[in-house]
Amino acid sequence: MALLSRSQYQERLQNVRLLVTDVDGVLTDGSIYYTEQNVETKQFHVRDGSGFYIARLIDLPLVVITARSSAAVARRFSELPVHALVQGTFDKVTACADVQRQLGIDDRQVAYMGDDLVDLPLLRRVGVAITVADAHPLVRQQADWITGLAGGKGALREVVDDIVSARGLWDRVMNDYETRQGGASDVGFGREAD
Ligand SMILES: [Mg+2]
Image (cartoon, rainbow, N blue to C red; front, side, top):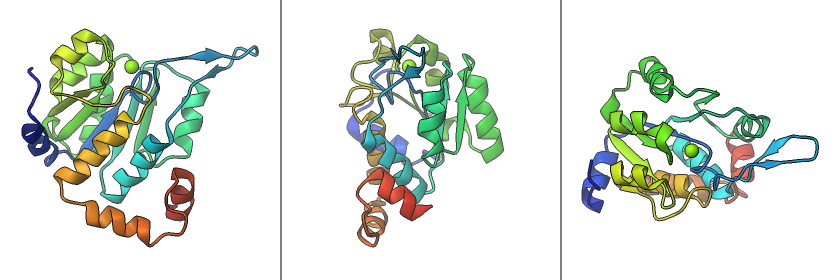
C-alpha cells in the first residue's frame, strides 16, 4: 500500500458504509493508568465522542474492536452510540467480518483505524486503511491514509469529518446541531439525540 493523495482518499471515503476503530493508541494516546485499587483507566477525547453522534446522524455504523478488555472502555462506549463493541479479541479480522456479514457490507466499504502491528491484518483487508499521526512506523508505511492528529487527540473525529465532507453531508450535520439546544457537547447532544 502507498499513501493516497487527498483526492483519492476522499473518493474512497465516498464508498465507506462502516467505520471500525481500535481503542488504545487511536481513541487514546496509548497511556494506560492503574489506580491504587488496580483499576485500569484511560483518557478519551470529547470530540471523538461527538464523532460517534455525527456518524449516527449520517447513518454510518461505528464499530470498536480492541484486543484489550477493560471496564473503562465498557463505560465510555455505554454512553456513545456505538453499533458494536468487541473487547478482548486479537482476531480483529474475524470480529470485523462478523459485523460486515450482519450488515451486508463488503471489505471495500469498510474504513479501519488502527495504530499497531496487531491491526495490520485488518488494515490490509479493508477499503480504506487509516492510521494516526503517531502510529507505529510499520503501520504508517502500510496505511492508505495518516490522520493529521495523533491518537487520543481527536483522530477519529477527523476521519468522521472527512467522511461527512466526502459524502457532502455537512448541511445535514449542521442542521441537526443548529436545531438542538446545547448540541455542541457530546453529552448534551447524546442526551438530546437519545
Ligand atoms: Mg492500538
